[in-house]
Image (cartoon, rainbow, N blue to C red):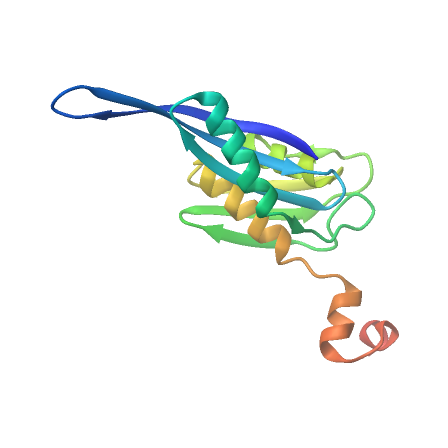
Length: 157
């Protein structure tokens, strides 16, 4: 499993007596073969926050359906005020995405894809929206099992 640290923030709580500092880490884990997860960890030390986030990411792993290094069809998703649009791309295109979206798609194992992010660019919401869009993807085999038909019947009618 590969692990990437997306954000590490220092958070301050001010009280009458003093300031309390803690750290918040956002980590994405994936095996570059269709499995990805993310986690948020909080602790007094940055190393502990990263370790906690990694442990939570391992617990939230999801399986993504990929076909030939890309996704089988277009997909949209929304989380909070973040909107994501993912579209399959032909071989040699690469990952057309930026920031957090690129990190998630690389760790999933996607090699060719177009993406467009609208609305908020909050890293936490972006990761949740991308993973939601990827989990909603279905291929012909899953659709045929849901409908109780053969794959040949689905394509030929």
